[in-house]
Image (cartoon, rainbow, N blue to C red):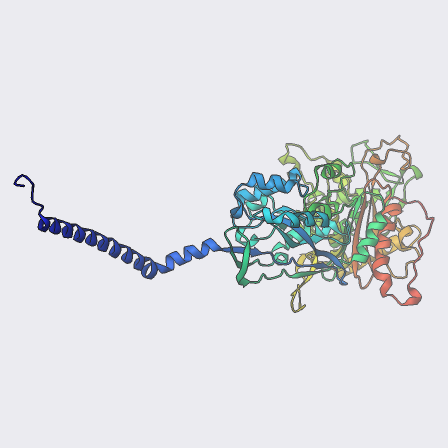
Length: 632
């Protein structure tokens, strides 16, 4: 028994109690730390973590505004919106984008253009934005997706509004079109202004009035579950619809002008000389802008760009042509202002030669022996080139340039659509800048609107409107008023003064208008074909702009030579004389003689605009089927 150790219960008890105390102390310290941390998170830093939590469960979703509508002056809808079903993806909600796109490709048709556009959006836009993968789904495609939707997290169907042009290609030269926002567009726009918006104005009125038509995007805060499905909308700031545009353009007149040009390539621009309002703006051939809205296919675009008639060229705005004899009234008026005696005569044997030269500048009537003795009135009415050869030399190139510049030739008109080109008023300085001398013969042919001189149809119509309004011009304008989409209140845009020709003697202008009136109202006039039987008085001037130089010995027959070598037919007119309401310029590419081809087009335009307002007894207009042959 003496060898058996005695257990020290007291010592063990003290040791146990010490260990218990240590454990309790440690647990207490840990508990206090946890409680302190919890208190910090819940009380002190509550707002920060509550915000983070909300952002994880609340998605800001942009709401696209309704784009403004475009109407003609009589309320005809030219551009509207219609609902389409779109397939969209929110990248933040997608675990594997390649797998999702592969699955969606089995349900709906996805072409390379759709995928390219989607990946571009994926690079440029926030991942919480809803990105359009496919526009304008068919009902069958929408139904197939709806059945499979439960397993395609991140993909949704949405109803959106897409731009639509109900009149097709009518007035596309003025309207332009909208298209998907491209990579180049993103470099010049403010991303905040286009949240949720897929389209932007590309050309024409759609582009120049983009900020008016676009509207302002709204936003809604949507609570989503762990799978990204929307549970409820917590807040909503509605979008602001774009404003509507009320144009000066007359759709009925526009249609009449396009039909009058028929299959010809050409342009018609009609302006109200009292305000500068553009009544018609035609470029033919035309094209349907609807194919550009959702992205035109490569084959369709290739067909347009490969078309030898160049339908994508806006001839009314960008086409540049020699004006031919339509330049004569402006030079004649300038000469009158310089003191030219309108009764001064020149003899026209059918050609003109410069002193010391044997080169002959032919008149269009050179084979008939010329016009004989002519004064300014005769030269305008019969379009005698020899008279204006002499006049050009008398004026000199510097004065010719200044006269044409006064009427706005060679300068932009300031029309409210983008991309306006200018014509060219050549001068010795212009040639010297290209290292070339100015020859006296160039001055001669400037008198009949030939040589290097070029005008756009818009410039020519604008100059004609200035002439019609006694020298007072207005900046051409497409838009007449802006309409509030909610109240329908119209804010009319005031006419903006443009080029003004200061006339020293108003009788000079009246003399020229009298001459232009005789052009279309007397049998000797080169515009008699278009003015015959008109129930209102017209003033006008024909022009035939030579495309190919025909030698003096060549036999010229417009019907026999190749179409692309025929002269361009040009005509300017305004009516009614005394109180003009419309001024028009017509150019028919390779049409032949201006009075015979472009003149009747101008007459149909004038009739379409003026006849509906005439008394019923006078509301008839017959054009002759045959008339004397004239050039000019």
